[in-house]
Amino acid sequence: MKIGIDKIGFYSPGYFLDMADLATARNADVNKYTIGLGQDRMAMPPITQDTITMAANAAVGILSEEDLEAIDLVILGTESGTDQSKAGATAIHHLLGINPYARAIEMKQACYAATAGIQLAKGHIALNPTKKALIIASDISKYGLNSGGEPTQGAGAVAILIAANPRIMSLDNDAAYFTDDILDFWRPNYSDYAFVDGQYSNEQYQRFFEATFNRYMEDTGRTLDDFNALTFHIPYTKLGLKSLRMVADIDTRPDLFENFNHATYYNRTVGNIYTGSLYLSLISLLEKGSLAAGSRIGLFSYGSGAVGEFFSGVLEDGYKDHLVSDHQTMIDARKRLSIHAYEAMYNVSLIKDGSHQILDTTHETSPFYLKEIKHHKRVYNK
Ligand code: COA
Image 1 (cartoon, helix red, strand yellow):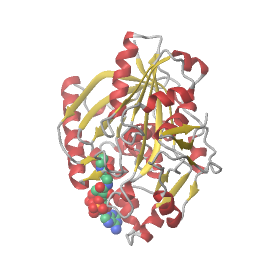
Image 2 (tube, rainbow, N blue to C red):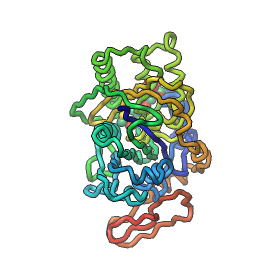
Image 3 (cartoon, helix red, strand yellow):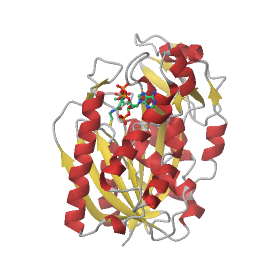
């Protein structure tokens, strides 16, 4: 039985900062950001968008009434969740109106968690083929104003429906995964921002890619010739490009580099969305590329701390007909922030003292948003 991605869609908030404006403000050469890191813009969430609302906004665009009845597993992968105890997936389950006979959990392993969710969902569907699983990767990436990681921020969510006989991509039953206890990027409970040892993290990312890619090839007997595209977790697009260069040569496989370019389309303008970055890259490739049905795609997932996984999938007949059609419209409708407006938005925070905070939601056009905090509880519109 084939199991895989039946539907996939993303959401990103309605504001962005252009890298040219950041470069001017930080006295940096814009080419460092656009060429050196491979990023053009980054999405900025207003205070009314958190990981729960972004997840619900991503999922509402792909789910039908029939899906809401068939889903019995909801997994939120995030590293910028809103609660230490209650899973954000329970709120998402409610906002979307999914039938109550479902499991709803949140998973954490930095940017890797959604991949773990997808693999768990695959096993779940193998045992329950008439059911569907909703996996959502949702994150706000913030390193602090004037920090080294500032040009690699972003915000957004990717929703993925895993089902039997998928209409977009079936997942191969092969995966190679690798864990090592390292501190390349982490966020202690007391800190609003992640700590990152950027250059060390890049090295580790590539070590994990090499280990899982080689292991996958040894285990499956496949070679690069069996792949039409390789996609990567891309905190910034240049890291994926450098990793592709580790295993492929542009002269012998120009198609892999062309497809990689397609696979960076939304990431270049949305920025780093942590758990969803690999899947935003996959959406970019599927929408902007022209891969034929039957093409095999390799996916490298990496979550600092660290876990890496290389796995693969094969595109289904007519997959293009089942992609979400209005992602580009959403991106085109975003408002450009001045550096001043970006910094002001950055510094707005939710109250933590249990008092009542009513948020200004007049700017909101998304289906779901946060409207108030009351008695330490987040209140969403539905
Ligand atoms: N024109 C073109 N390229 C330029 C340039 C210019 N004027 N100036 C610098 N560059 C290039 C550098 O050569 C480098 O490219 P290379 O790596 O291919 O050599 C790239 O731009 C970045 O420069 P660097 O000096 O390494 O930047 P940095 O010290 O500011 O750090 C990161 C960059 C990515 C390490 C930092 O932004 C970071 O820590 N981000 C967070 C990363 C993350 O999220 N990791 C965890 C999850 S995987």
